[in-house]
Image 1: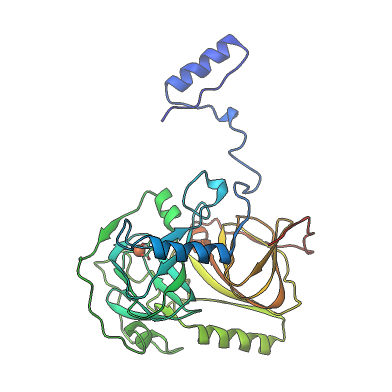
Image 2: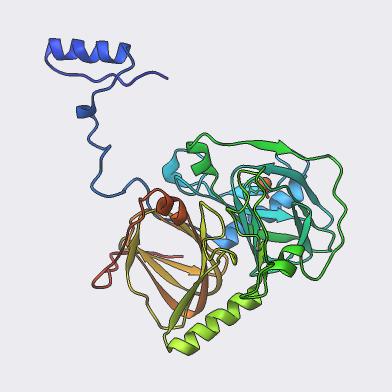
Length: 363
Ligand code: GTQ
Ligand code: FE2
């Protein structure tokens, strides 16, 4: 890496700048963009479901799953990130396509992953050997360093959203990866995974269970690995009924601790009823929204992005955000909030009045 060279009209100062660069040093006073008043390095961006779906399907037709990477994944590559395959500075978002009869083989890595299912049926994900079936609207977790592989023994392809903290873990230079055995793991398809059998009975947990002391990640992520759409749907309906409000949201929580599903990432489902516009909020840290159901628009720093089911968009750190539903809408949200909270960097602010819409990004 070559240190940036700064220039000055005064020969002595210019000479100093040359010597600083040669010594791999840079003066702070030449870097006004470093300490911004508020985060401003990323703009909002939207990816359309029609485009994502078409290209995922074409990849399914043209590129075998065995060709590089073992997973047919199209990552959301934010145009502000100079060609990096990342959606934000901390978050990876992607669509994954697994055709009928295909297998994405076993591996594990330190970045934590979640999957939110958009379309199809019949896929089983094995997480540390526990077989979790996947259906639209389900959230499935693959915590840091857990073995995982995806099987599609069915007759139709499946497409899901992948969310990972990969850019964050990469910034911390803590990426580790290990491929699994070449042989696919055998599994017994069961109605409910072991994880759900043990941890999905609300308010009841297996007594006296302890974290695995050998495993640095043990006890830090939810042991419930699947959150089913019918439960989420029912919880949102009950909230709306109980509060009488035209919007409600739920956070996917670790049933043992009540904390976020994984140490670095938060997941939520937001329901906004037709005709309602939510209050404007700013949050430090970035997020990815995946429209599960309905249609409407989100205003981000004065720009209105219209959306329908399957569209995905990024809300940058400290952007002003509010949602407006045309039809009853359910929005899946994935963010790095727990990482900021753990580091004492979390902030949020509710605007006193709704932001103005300055431009309309038609869709
Ligand atoms: O399905 O295991 O989008 O390892 C990126 C990395 C998905 C996966 C991604 C992965 C996976
Ligand atoms: Fe993976």
